[in-house]
Each structure stands twice: as structure tokens, then as C-alpha cells.
Image (cartoon, rainbow, N blue to C red):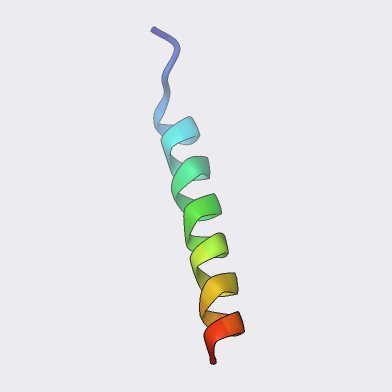
Length: 27
């Protein structure tokens, strides 16, 4: 399938961003 490391990296960074946003709301 056409699942590349770049796709995985983009998903990971997106998850990290949403995580940071969540932390920003908490603190």
C-alpha cells in the first residue's frame, strides 16, 4: 500500500500539535 513514512510523520506531528494545544488550554 501507499503508506509512507512521510504520512506517518505528518500524522505524528499533527497529534503532537493537538497535544500541545490541549496542554495550553489546561495550563
